Length: 382
Ligand code: UDP
Image (cartoon, rainbow, N blue to C red):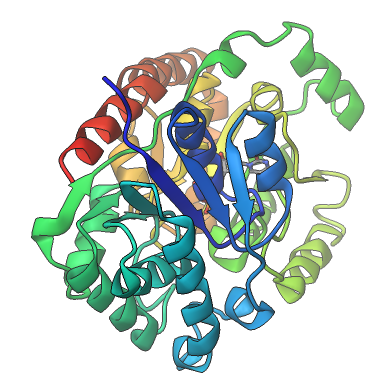
């Protein structure tokens, strides 16, 4: 089957979860398709290294920095968004479809249809609730989706339900879970985890890893607070603040340097060797305080055969069967998180069985092949 000719559009070029997912998709579609970015950065380099054709049309700064949660922001940047729409319409010539990978990409791509741009598929990777998006921005996104898109791919049931609750048409929605190649997890050099532990200087101490960008709603502070009740346990934070969040970063760094936690918290910044780092951990934690749309880190932790403990809200509750393929805890509850970590560490054989079942499930339900087959089918129908 020949894949469709798709113009993939994303507003950002930093490596968030949506970009890592699009990297896999665009790589599979590289014979027929192109990626349009509104800013240059590491994502462009990763795409080109994978043989994907990329076009960069640097958008006015005001459109890129507008905060999705800010009231009126979308209206203020209308001229810049219109300029972006013109770019999509022009780059879209010769393509059968536009795949909008972010909310800003959706706005530009939907407006481009007014200028003869190709039909739009919105890959919705956000939970459209007040916690993440202002009412006006939700309304704009949902109205454009309802009137100017052919399909809304949602990365979890939770994402789809939030779209419908915000006024989105259910008929447009199609569920498309993320998919992962297990290669990097399966072919790790066996000595790697021990090397990482030596570099961290922690020997056999229990290590809990968080692999999210630094942001309040990703809840790094929840693990830090849980750590106060777990005097032997170390924490590994992998990821950086991708969208500012300077205040939160200094808040959690200050928390980590209190005497109770000092020496037990390790900050590594953004890393490209997540599989090896996960393998060095005893537990992978995902501590979002708000509903997480999907939570790639959860499936990755399962592929690394690590017990995963995650907040029981949004996508994670679809990825983990509590006590069977991982553990779920109430969000923003350091006491419950500490209790679960203690239990997982106390019973190594039950925890190993949990991790093994998680791995089997991740390989079966969330493979890259499954994702691509479902995406090919969905796009054929547009
Ligand atoms: N990640 C990474 N390096 C880091 C931190 C995170 O490559 O230093 C990856 C992580 O492995 C995962 C993605 O970033 O694939 C984050 O995706 P997730 O769905 O968990 O969160 P998002 O960033 O989309 O909100």
